Amino acid sequence: MDNDIAEPDPSRQRNGVVEGLYGEFTDSLNAKVRYSVSLTESALTIQKISSSPGQDEVVFHLADCLGCLAYKVEDEADVGAFFTAYFYPFKRRWISTGMARQKVEQCFRVAMVQDPLTNLQEAERWARAIREASIRQIPRRHDVKYYELRRPCRVMVLVNPQSGRGQALQLFSGQIEPMLTEASVPYTLVITEHQNHARDLVRETDLSQWDALVILSGDGLLFEVLNGLLEREDWEEAIQTPLGILPGGSGNALAASVHHYTKSPPAWGKELLLSCGFLLCKGLVTRLDLVSVHLASSQRIFSFLSLAWGFVADVDIESEKYRLVGPMRFLVGTLLRLASLKVYQGRLAYLPAPPFTPQNSSLCSSLPCGPNSSPNQNSRHNHITNSNHSTNSNHNTAHNSSNIANTTMRTEPQPVNQKGPPDSLLADLEQPVPDHWTVVKEEDFVLVLAMFQSHLAEDLFAAPGAAADDGFIHLLYVRAGISRLALLTLFMTMEKGGHLAIGCPHLVYERVKAFRLEPLSPEGAITVDGEMVEYGPVQAQVHEGIARLISG
Image (cartoon, rainbow, N blue to C red; front, top):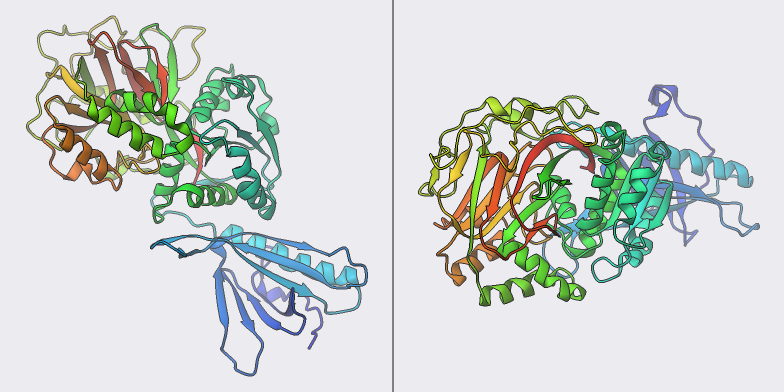
């Protein structure tokens, strides 16, 4: 039967927010079916009203709730109103094994009196209470501190329609746009028209109009956005603009990393997109490391993902022609490159990171953090003479051997026209590396890969120990002499992050703060965040936590 509209019980309120509600409503499609609905601080419990109490009870956790909307249908003869709650719980996949977030809608009709306005007000009361309770139940990791985006959050969504298989716009309209509506997130859609469109836009736009910039593309568009922000006069403030990433390309490495950091079951394709869309709408913000990369031409760019030379860079560049097959392009490129495996000559040196302690974990004590609060300014005082983080204890390194002259680190002021944080750990590229760096004796490599996040692609878990703001560069290199089969095994085990545990004698892994790579082979490719840059000497330094990332 219809019950009267109950006023909020003061004993069930805190700071003006209703802590618990109870009501009885009909099914949105069948007026003969009725439900009792109970809202607590942490869950929405729904039970079909029948002659068998305790049957058909379903509990939805508010941590999985994206939002709740109240509305009235256009039929003037219908005095009822509706509210729909949108949940994205982990459920078993329909076809394959494992769990993934899946959308579940719960819609109820409110028709307690004959006054349409009163019914709509009651529906709005329930929708508001569910929204507010779900905000307080945003899932958080215990080892990470966050701040939350303001609500309502004003979002600029940048979409590259050419990324991946050319389906980014369809992915937005099919999956992301409905989620933003469900979460009551207003947005402005910007479709990029040419290379560096996003870079130019964020460099000049008034960022006070936006609470977050969201990229739906591959990793290349985020590279443009980050470098555009760091080219602004107000770069110190601009780089703290929260950034969201939605996978719409063929690599989607940062999106896969963000998903991994939530400790959720692995996800790919549209499941990964849904997971990242869920995190975006929940609006938790953490810190993100950036790495400044100096090229031979004296140009400095900023990277969030990786730097590669040798095998990985070759695969990345050569597989571009297979972009239409999506993430499979990397598998095709890997197999083709294995058939004509190359060895590259070069010199590699790095500044080892201090021994890992819990204090180095992904933890921000106070957000937002200023760009000059990075602890790596003190890293130059850590004098490490041996490598205790390698997967192979027999690799050859030297503590700045005699063929490299001792030098002090660069202390001259940053050029007036150079924006972004200063690089206190690097000498000029024309000078020898500092005397307390480790110099790798080998000069024959199959690949050098510097990782700044956990994933190199959706299905390449390259740096299992990485976190978004751990302050490390995860440096991997493979020495010459590895067989094709061993290299293939290495990449096959990388899918689940097992490559560091198989005992490959040619693979070396180090956590470092900075590194320098000097290719000696006359031909080759270097990629930064999957984009090819000029070939030649290159060096890089991590800047811990200076950017902001919408994560979970």
